[in-house]
Image (cartoon, rainbow, N blue to C red):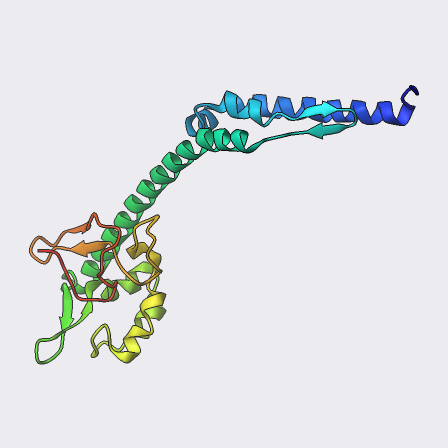
Length: 209
């Protein structure tokens, strides 16, 4: 059996140095409270992702069982983190909508009606359309035909342009297709419907009683 050459020894030493560096990085990551909060079983995950040195190579082997176990350790915390971030985003959306409503009030001395109406009393466009200028969407607002209903041939082309602030975070509905936030016509309040798949378009003049 031939003795390893200086190059081979150097490559093995380099592989070990890289392994040690990766191990130190994983250790330092484990000291972070935020990481532990997202991945409570971090030590198990780190152990499974630690490569081994084989000659001059770093080797990481995960069979089907190992992959399943790794996913079982990582997926639930990630989903929890995503749900938490979605709740924060939803709260921020509500704050922005409330601010837009108040800015509308300051400019017009009244809150927007639940829906605008035609001369014969038929509903046209939702209040969501009328606060667009106060959501930095003035250019979109100017594209609407205000004397036409929300589902007129022209106004329907603008549905997909409605801002995502009207959608519940993590909602699977297409952009502009539906809204989650409805206003009570009686109480002048604003709240999520609590249903991720509400069939109300952001432009449709519909409220909750």
